[in-house]
Amino acid sequence: MTRLNLALQGGGAHGAFTWGVLDRLLEDETLDIAALSGTSAGALNAAALKAGMIAGGRQGAKDSLAALWMQVANLGDFRMIRWMQPLWTASRAWTDVVEAAFPVSPQGLAAQLWSPYGWGPFWENPLEPVVRRLDFSQVCHGEGPRLYVGATNVRTGRIRIFEGDDLTPDALLASACLPTVFQAVTIEGDAYWDGGYSGNPALFPLYAPDLPDDIVIVSINPWLRDAVPMSPLDIQNRINEISFHAALLGELRAIKFVKRLIAEGRMERGQMKDVLLHLIADDGLMTELSAGTKLSPDPGLVMRLHQAGRKAAETFLATHRADLGERASLDLNRLLG
Image 1 (cartoon, rainbow, N blue to C red):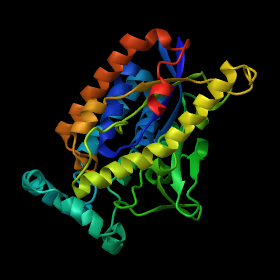
Image 2 (image 1 turned 45 degrees about the horizontal axis):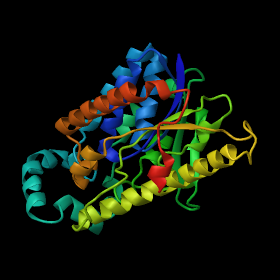
Image 3 (image 1 turned 90 degrees about the vertical axis):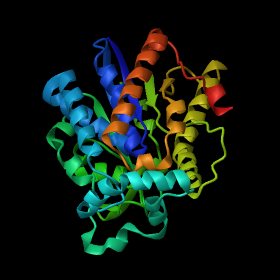
Image 4 (image 1 turned 60 degrees about the vertical axis):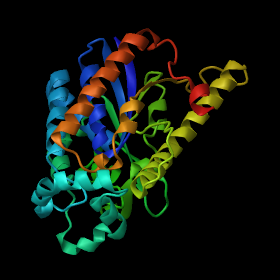
C-alpha cells in the first residue's frame, strides 16, 4: 500500500477535473489517501471524498463526489440568485453568441459593475444547499483521511486552516467565497474570502511528521499561457490565476530551498520534511476553456472535465506510479525557473 497526500486547487466549476482525478485514484486499491488539503472547489471535493469514504469506503467516496458535481452542474450561473436561474437556461445560447462576437460576456460585465451585496436581503449563496447536503459528522470524523481546508481572513489577509470540528458548512463556503460573486462568510466574528488568495492549496498542513512524504498536487489553473489576454474578462481571469498561484509558488520555492540545503549537507536529514512532489494537470484543456466557464457550469462541461481528470490521473499513474514513495516527479527547477 502506497500512502500519499493530495493537495487540491480551487478554480470554480473547473474543479470537476479534480473530481475525475479523484474518481480514478479511488479505483486503485494500492493507494491510500492519508490527508487532503483543499481550497475552494478543491475543499468541496476533499470534503465530499472524506464524507463518502467514512460512509461507504472507496465506492462511497466515488458516489459522494458524483452527487456533489451533479448538483453543481445544475446550479446555473453562480452570479445569479436562485429565482433568476430559469433565465440563465433561457439566455444561455444568446450569451454564447454574444461572448463569441464581443470581448466580454453580459454576466462578466455585470460582475464588474455590481457587488453581491447589491442584492440586499434577496442574495443567496448558490453553493449553500450543495455544501449542506454533506454529512459533517463524517466530514469531521477522526478516522479516514485528514482534511484541511483553507480560507483567507479578509481583515488580516492571512490564511486560516480549518480542520477537525472546525470543518463546518461555513468553513467550506468561506473557502469557496470569491468576493466578486459571493458575500463574505463570517466565522467567529471574522469575515473570510476564497482560500485561493492565501494558499491554492496550502501545502504546509501536509508536512506533519506522521504523514507520508508524497504530495500530489491536482492543478486546475494553467501554469503557462502563451497568448497574452486582451479582452477584459480574459485579463481579469489571468490576474486571478496569477494571484491564486502566488502563495503556492512561494511554498514551492521554500521546498526547493530546503531540498538544496539537504542535498548540500547544510541541513541534517529529518530536521525538516523532505517532501516528494507530484503534479496532475491538463493545462492544454484549461487554456482552451473560457473564463466564464468557471462560474457557469453545465452538465456537458462538468462531464467533459471529469473525463479529462480521469485521463490525466491514468496518465500520471502509468508514468509515475514507481516514483511514489521513492522520488519526486515534479521538476521544481523547470517549474520555478
